[in-house]
Length: 175
Image (cartoon, rainbow, N blue to C red; front, side, top):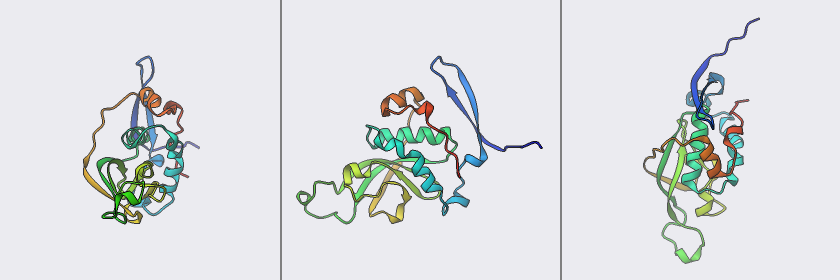
């Protein structure tokens, strides 16, 4: 019996020698905000992106790396830049805590309203929301100034930047 796969998008990848290769992304691997905002998708995405948490980059660098992986895997998203504000500590004595109450920040938003942020704890402390989560369950307020636009960098350069071989990073597959 023949099997048919519906493809959602085509990803073009350039190798080290400058050769271009096309890779089709099956529709079954792509995120649909209408059907998946209340499923295990956020947990699967967080588990998939988890190895990047150890990357020696700050919020702008990690947002760039994660955005590249999401693009390669056909996952719609928007990179945001703005301010991260801890509303519980806003207005408190800044000397009373080693953590910031607000800071400039980069993060990723998914069409479902989920935030992808593995760097809030770097500035806001260990109680800050971390990973993939809904905006309204965070004590932090994400104040977006604008959508960020990154120039597309080669995967090899992003790999060096974050210390993870992104060419060998597994594709995102929903369970």
